[in-house]
Image 1 (cartoon, rainbow, N blue to C red):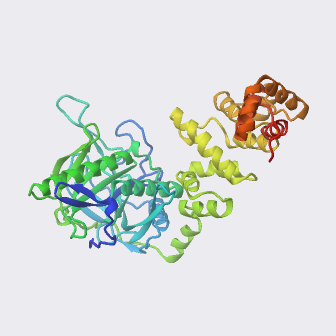
Image 2: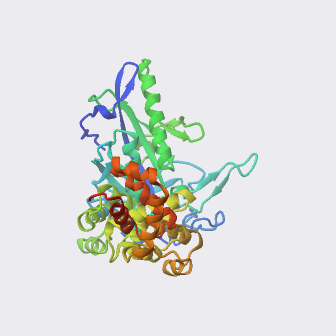
Length: 500
């Protein structure tokens, strides 16, 4: 990969050192497990959580005479992902053997793609913000390539006092290695990039993005330089499996490299690991170059070739992606960029919101989904798939407010009941006597009683009309929040002689 600097140095991203400012350069190689029922070159299952070595075929175990056969669905998933990344799809690509020894790699080599990947250059647009003025900054991050390769197995060193075990369930599972260009200039940009990439593959249905299960992980390349100078020597931080850890690893590694350079030392190109318990990286091995792996075309696999019709058929079936959905929410529903960004961050959240917003005011639906539903789920440690409040239930609460059956305050209480107990919102309102009081006679009686009981406050209102809000609050309290707020406000002003 030829390194090209496409970013103008930005002082707000500089890292101050003892001898001046520094700039961090970040690129990522993300390994995303392809969503498919079987592996890249065998029919073995890819189901997660099965007993050790139960998802292993003769091909995965590298038994003599076993030959790989390409899984067409994995090819389709890679092309779909490339299309989602606005990338060049290469109609001819080659599989190569990447030679290295490790106990969990039975073949002694990994089948990957080197010079001729299935997907070429593309891009991802990340959005940072909002800043103090509520503005967002869009940054384009280049994609160098996406290639298909098989995963290795897993070495387990904690099962026995003197021996290590090997689990080959992952051996041969299809991976998409998505390689970015070195276009990121901060840990925040790197976290935003990983978040956006995970969102895209989840929308596409090409990877589940479950980093805690290892189905998406990142090798993070970090270097530092004086602003505007040539790229520095990079270190690769392997297999980071959390967006938060990506940010922490970059922050630590940048500081480590700056410290070495400011002390007159030099950075050695190496592979490092991030220890989340200590919040630091540590050396693993010197970094291999391509020639160390002795790549050559796999003699058991013909070149992978397909035509324009194959690509167009996959393109026609693509879903609406996050950026397009966000733009539509802003344009058609009048949402703010911030609200739209929150709602499209996960496909499941966007689907939930659209179900609630169907036939209703988009801004109202967005407020309830973001502030009330997502806020409640965050407090209880649940995600949108685990929500106890269905879109139909939340929509019914919004409908009750619009119909004047309940006030906004009552709606908040009703939401908490549905959240904790479930049930039909309309039936709960009826059964528990939660309907809003709209009888002006009853409201007027409550207003008169509050005014009569508080002559001192009446005098204060004469001097400061905004004090009328105190009476409104007292009436709402006296009616247990059931009085129509607009009716209360109008009556209070009329009784106190406050002009509109």
